[in-house]
Image 1 (tube, one colour):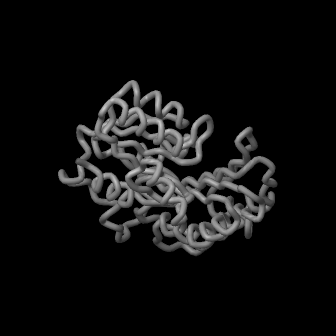
Image 2: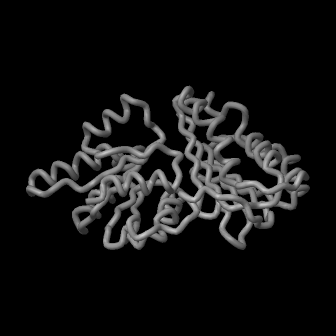
Length: 271
């Protein structure tokens, strides 16, 4: 293994550069998220890590119509690097030899099959290292960026996506409520007051567009000011974004995104 300092988030960005365009061309979605800590340094082999993840993902998984892949990267302080890749049901098992390659790097690989599809969990216990970080992502929020007093509703059918958003907003002092579909988002909006809505577009029971339309209609009927709303989606082509704005969203946040992108979108809408 070639040991050198690197930032795990840079490996994620390399994967995004390869797979986001392929997903759009294949009418699929590649959603990648990183938690706090991924911008900090580690000592390991980033090229080997990239090659392993690319092997797990395959050369072009989006040749299968409507293929959706979610990848979560975690590298919290004093914890190993953890990558989870969730792909649709029916995806084949990775080559068994790949587990040996991961073990050779000091890590482990586990594969499970469930109703939601295949999940591959990669753990790499590589040591932390001092390395220059992106100040916009690593620095604590200043008072101007504090969201104290804000009530934010998060709606996403993926537990991983909800967790990532919650982690990105954990140090903002905002009050967060998370639900798993558009119907629950509408019900929660009726039951509570919110300053901001973060709604995924593709959700079961009721999608994000239907949810925001129902909320906007209720606001109009009650004579209420519109609640700030951000469409959080991997489907961010120009015509799609136009549809979100027409439906009632104020702006959109294209997956995958970084914490500073999320904060910029929220602070722009904050009253």
